[in-house]
Image (cartoon, rainbow, N blue to C red; front, side):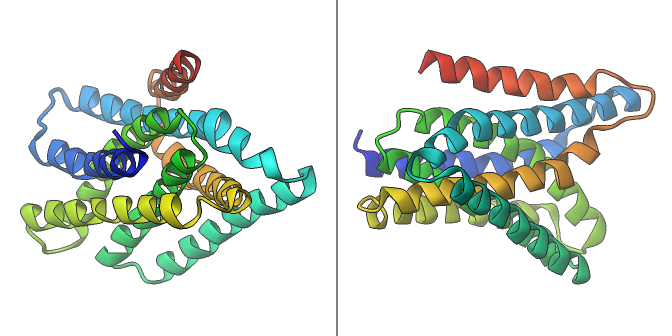
Length: 236
């Protein structure tokens, strides 16, 4: 399969993990309630651990190749500050659409990084797609529940929105692959910028949802998610 078709397919599959998470949230009925809560917190932690492994094993190692330590740190911090600023703006307009924008703010940089990985000829692109998908399932799950509780939209409409959001992944990935392939330093910069933003999202949005009073198993989901990324990295 050519890199172009690989990017389209992998970004699409990673994006479709969001409506999959939404459908799980719509249909799941786990009893007892305490088991449902612990499982959902564990799944959220798994997604956070998977993203951390993507940052540590794929994005940052590739991103620092063309930059000095100072320049790399500035790009990384800029990504974090950009996500923080967007987060602040979204919190001021607490509407149902802000939930969708928040999901896009994660997924589009991830898709750009995935397309960039293939542009650099990085075989870890498949691993990165898998890690993004692992994170998108719990994100879609949680976003669906929040939208359903805070809006009047029917579940099928919300899930359709999530499917449409998944379509933005191939667009971003193809842009990075076709238009940035001749500028590897720009691609590395995108990876560092995305890494900073994703790390901010992990500790701002994902990690706080993991804590469950008097339950100690959910944080192990983060360890398992990182281990998943570690095994994939070593196998490739």
